[in-house]
Image (cartoon, rainbow, N blue to C red; front, side, top):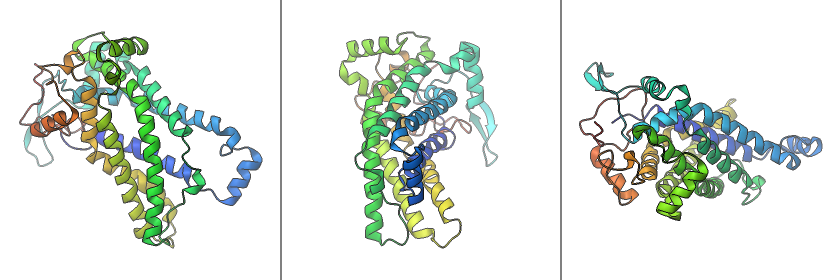
Amino acid sequence: ERVGMAGAGAGAGAHRGAAAGVQARARDPPPPSARRMDSGSGGLGSEDNAPTTEALFVALGTGVMALSHRLLYVKLLIQVGHEPMPPTLGTNVLGRKVLCLPSFFTYTKYIVQVDSKIGLFRDLSPRLMSNALSTVTQGSMKVFPPDEIEQVSNKDNMKTSLKKVVKETSYEMMTQCVSRMLAHPLHVISMRCMVQFVGREAKYSGVLTSIGKIFKEEELLGFFVGLIPHLLGAVVFLWGCNLLAHFINAYLVDDSFSQALAIRSYTKFMMGIAVSMLTYPFLLVGDLMAVNNCRLQTGLPPYSPVFKSWIHCWKYLSVQGQLFGGSSLLFCRVSSGSCFALE
């Protein structure tokens, strides 16, 4: 097991926190002068150039996903319990000797040795397609105009400010849930394509071929395995992040402070990192369910038990002390119990 809640967990939090911050700033009502400039000059904020702005977000997301694919790839292999290299003797922060598992960099070198450098980008296309679909979906959904989402200030009374943050969070929750449901089939394909590295399998070799195989073997439900824990994790993350950021911005950061706007612009980002550490088990369970019992080695005994449901998976990982397995890619040690008997 890899323990701790840094590394990949913080990286995922940074990614989701940054996305939440960008979306929040994008929905903040601009000053009148900016609105006049956008409507008069046809800038990026104008309705005429909305497709251009959306295309820029898709391109940015694609670049970030491509750059972070190695990290996510290694994290997934660790999540499913693939530890091909023996642990080494090291010391923890207290100076005690412990057995440490290979770090992200060591694991990356191992993948290069087995699969070459191209192997680090194994089956990147489904992830890029999933990210693009999710971005376009969130950009296309307009439950109500962005101007209706007012910026929270500590000048508001508690009832008014809570009403604003609930309205904003409800909007984000609807858009994220819909986008995740639409993109989840591609996420399942991506997960299964990547874990084929463990058994050197080639069952899933492309998006269209994978769609046909999943539908033939598992029918429509096969595309949505692991969706519920992912949705629950996203909802808990969103509400926790927004409410914490709201209380800090509205009641702890005074408007008279010269750097109040700067602090508020980064509060949601920092809260995103913190909350993502707590919601990591939802991500882990969802990813394990996506590859469980799919006729790949990593989804069958002895690599993994066959789980009846995501709740069964959660309980099993909890008993094994593995709910945060793979959350840390830099600081990791061998636990007293092992969830997957690989070798």
